[in-house]
Length: 290
Image (cartoon, rainbow, N blue to C red; front, side, top):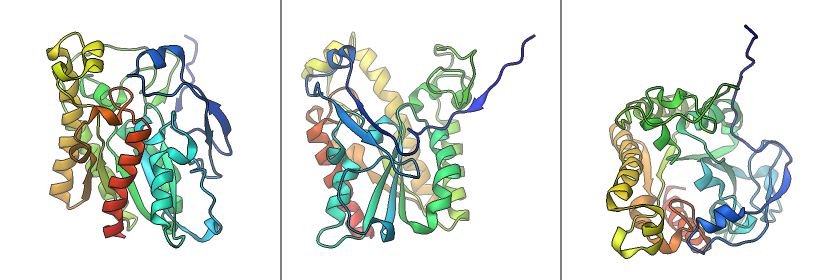
């Protein structure tokens, strides 16, 4: 039998990337019309975090605020300075520059991927960091319904690159047992490195089937919508449980943005109005904490 070479998947764009991405026709067609048909620049710094596009005169000496999560945080289809981490950076630096906000989001990241990024990329810069914000990962919904959980053999979400990976179907009732275990381990690991995580409950589009034309186009009936949303709610409820039990600060963007469809171009990605709303929410909360 021929050997199979495998590598651990590291969810980042890479170092010193400078590229543009444009949504494909299928992505535009599957949006509600608020996704722009445009080219979006994406650049990364020497540590592999997405650049804000803001001009900072003294970035080398500024404390870092790091955001970790999936495509919601990455905000690929938003212009550099419009992404909510970039807007947050500008807000926090008025009237005086104090912080850089490093965007560590990457499409398809699960909680396990973010833990890997924290271990291999964030810990080395913790001494320069003021806060690390861990956003709940909507990609976790795939892990909830697979018996292999976060270690499933999925093409996009598997933690290991393996040529035998496929796209497995659901094979168990949804459970957040492993999410809770990993999240508790994440919190304890950060504390062992003298750092307190901030958890963020990520928002998503949550409007009744009857009241949202986009929802009626995406889901065949209210039952299908309820099944999909139940997983997202479970993910955030687990974050709330761990936050309360372990004394971790949680910023509840899900409840703040109320699933308002005006903020999303699809089920869970922010449009330009949503990016602004998210930045305002985080600024209000962080201004008190900082």
